[in-house]
Length: 318
Image (cartoon, rainbow, N blue to C red; front, top):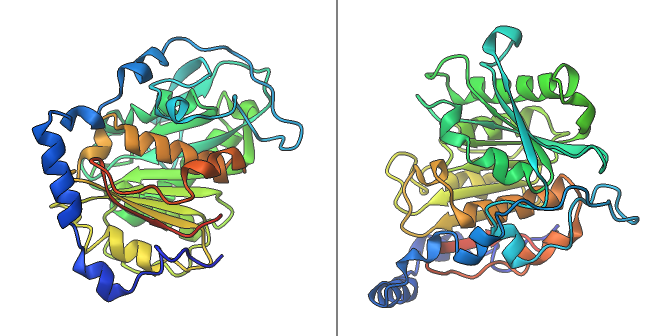
């Protein structure tokens, strides 16, 4: 698909990074005491209450899961599904270091898409644990993994994400709950770089979401998997100029793609619950793993800059 004009902005215009208006708005908002807007709202907290169990798939799309989405529902700490979890020991798997599987408890809604999530350099799965119940409660099987060693590089982490998906769909205790044709990868830092490696190596994946990704390889022209890259404006570990932005810009224009830069955020923003990361990650997974066009409204037209979002680029419509 051809990128929207916002996505096709010239490189020169992009590198100018005109941010005065955004910065002024931010300063005014902070002066008014609204800096807490990045935190989950009270209403979102109310939505975290235990939700109904079974929601039937729509007749025109057998992969739709859950009620019609709203801004409130994708910002909620918990979605419509109750969630269970199971630990997977490194002793019973090969190719990665074990992890934790989070999954919708109900068996009444058919199978679900699945996503494997890798941590960053020197980190373990606990740094990504908040994604487990957050995404699973929206109707996904989520596998937060440990890597073989904490020093593993992006290429190895990509292989481990794929090994985790293979275990999840072939040997895990929840394999019967998963649609093996609807799989995705996510990761933070070197795990985010690993998610790009996985998307390159397995084009049958339905989605990839690199979070403040780090990788020495800057070009990803081979990727055809729908890819949503999240960068952080104040990242001093994997600066957006050296990592997230060139990764995004190298993706083919024919690939469904998006780039969100978090305003004033650091490299470690993805390690703690974040409403913007959650709502747009949920929307991306729903749109491409579940082929659920009900979520297109949150991705297109492109979200506008705000106190939380420095910029958002992508090709629309998908």
